[in-house]
Length: 104
Image (tube, rainbow, N blue to C red; front, side, top):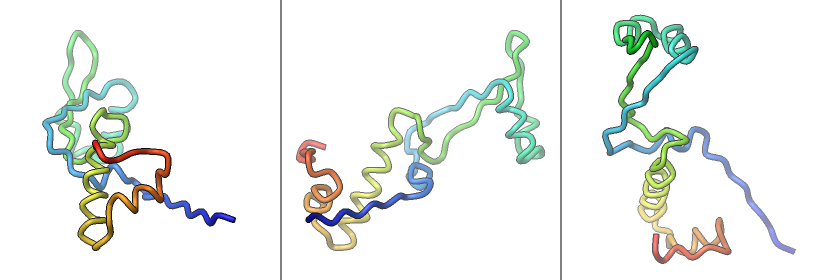
């Protein structure tokens, strides 16, 4: 019998810093959501290009769906595991037993 543990890190990618300069281009109803959340902060940055409303935002944290978000979160996770005194390879083999992490 094998014991299995499952964990979820809520907002995992949002915990990782975004070291690259990444600009998010927001269009459509999403702009209204940003303005509704904080009108004073976002309203002045709404612009128009070819008649379309746009909002450009610089990402300060990794964002799910971006190409590098998982890598930044993995690096943050690995650093934490090592700082806690654990062997990173052993921990990764628990979470991902069929993967080889030697080249990551």
